[in-house]
Image (cartoon, rainbow, N blue to C red; front, side, top):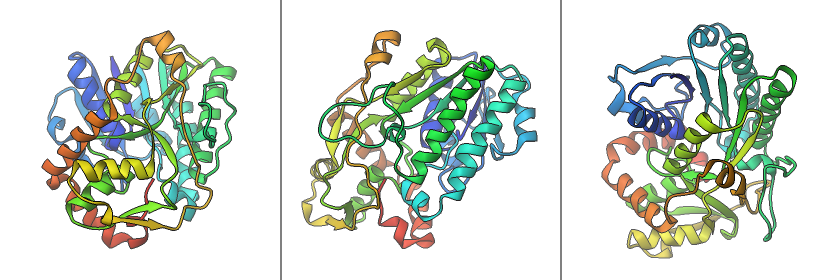
Length: 334
């Protein structure tokens, strides 16, 4: 099988590429990435010379580039997106351009090329927010609350429209908050870990009461793999980690793992329109495709902390760049 992966130099995309090449010796991958701030070729340093892998720098809105790459592709896994909520609050236009127009361009080119499968990677944030009870199912109405989540929900609707209107073989994947190896250090968990290593205060929104369902990135890659091969066209699948934690609790957990006290915690003004809680019901993917998260969050946080401690070569240049770009963004979390 030959796959076109968009956004493959990003966090989840690079982990997925590594997963596929390790699992399927006969598969080939084209990785299209614009190398914006979160796209890092160093994420794939270990496989860049693999004969089954080819990197192309370009944007998903560039229709001629996309048409050329689609010519002999069997399937598309579409990760490419602007994905940071705080950045979308400051300037929504790049999110609409990439996440809506870019997704339209990908769908149109894939339909023209008669691609056999199109996997669109979305987010649990399209559902909006929950109170203390219940979980999102795939039937929950979409009620996005940030410019980022609105742009992703718009992409989902385009994917659905291409299936309903043209019979195009597309599937939507909605994962919960990912964490793990190679995550851009602007995001909450790697921001905490790297700040602790450098003895820098950890910013926590409000009082840290917001709740997220945490999903290890390698579990997400397994889910996307299964959906690619066995998922039903026209469907959406939730992929949750079954690991709900308040932000303050996950902060304390990481501090404990790194033998530091809570003096490093700094509470900052809450984000506008900050969703209180996300939680995904995995019943559909578990029942239909047999996927479950693999391990407990305590074990996987230890693995994540260990990786960041051992790979300063990877994150220090990114942290330095972020600090020089904007102190405001560096003090924020996802």
